[in-house]
Image 1 (cartoon, rainbow, N blue to C red):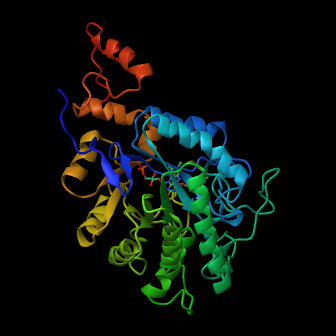
Image 2: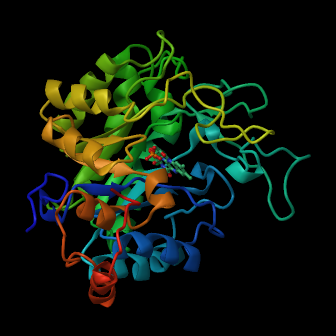
Image 3: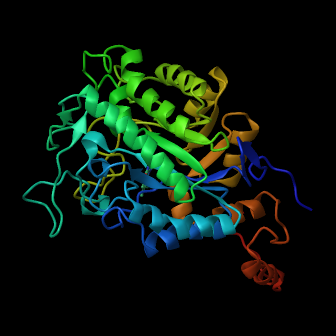
Length: 392
Ligand SMILES: Cc1cc2nc3c(=O)[nH]c(=O)nc-3n(C[C@H](O)[C@H](O)[C@H](O)COP(=O)(O)O)c2cc1C
């Protein structure tokens, strides 16, 4: 007998019904060429569809070439890039999952090496063969940290062009078969850098108080919403806090979320950090993660999803060190978030959802598995003296 869990209950957002509450958080694979997805991306994302992840986000995908984090990041500014996504989105849908895409601009963190090459900014000296640095942009001419390029401070005309670039990328995303769009407003990339007083020191209408600093991200959200049909859900990922007290705060996030809700954004995806110093997933020369000052324990960002959800009318997605099925279920049951995104846990165990369904008693007969696997894993479980304790 199956139980009825929140984790495996569907969620309808506008015209799209997610089969469950489990989401693949956007994960840069740094494996494209000229921004075009390839077999690696198909293999990577299709695995989660076989694993019954309800909503599968393709990685941060740049809306223009300057907006890539690394030379190997994906983009969606041309037709070739759109075509390359089509088999991926078709397969995800065929498996009953929903394909989503995260639209991004890396801003002053662009032109960097991949994490496994140290994640540092590309320079003329450290550029790999065939790769070169490119000029970067930001709200102000302040580098992220020592060793980073100084960005060109965007003019108001250039900001308007970028708003258009996001809207065009959203239209292209629909053509590529994506059914949900997320805007990347977190981790120190372009939109976050406009929001944060630690990065945005402009004194025109795009800077100053919170309303000025929110102007560009809100213009992007409005422009993207305007090109999306009503039935397409729009998510917005925030860094709910910068970390330092003088930075962007959770109260600022509540203010922003209210504005986003008013513009027709459906879900705020609550991440954190990344405004200063190292990108969050960069590793140091001795292989240790370089991060923000935030503590990174189990579910450390859930309180942000909870507060935004409680203080606004918008739905939230929790993310960050959510690893255990019961932990995920409790977050939903306790009303702390509407969706659960997993990143590294799904990399570690791409069939996490299927294993979670077992652990929570949702799928005792392995019916949730794809037909090609279901009958066989059912028989596997019938084997005498067999007990799978790995996900208990
Ligand atoms: C390899 C890797 C790539 C990532 N790429 C992105 C990305 O493209 N966009 C984004 O918003 N966050 C990105 N993140 C952050 C994740 O989406 C997620 O928020 C983070 O890993 C915390 O969740 P977790 O503890 O379940 O991994 C990345 C994280 C990792 C480990």
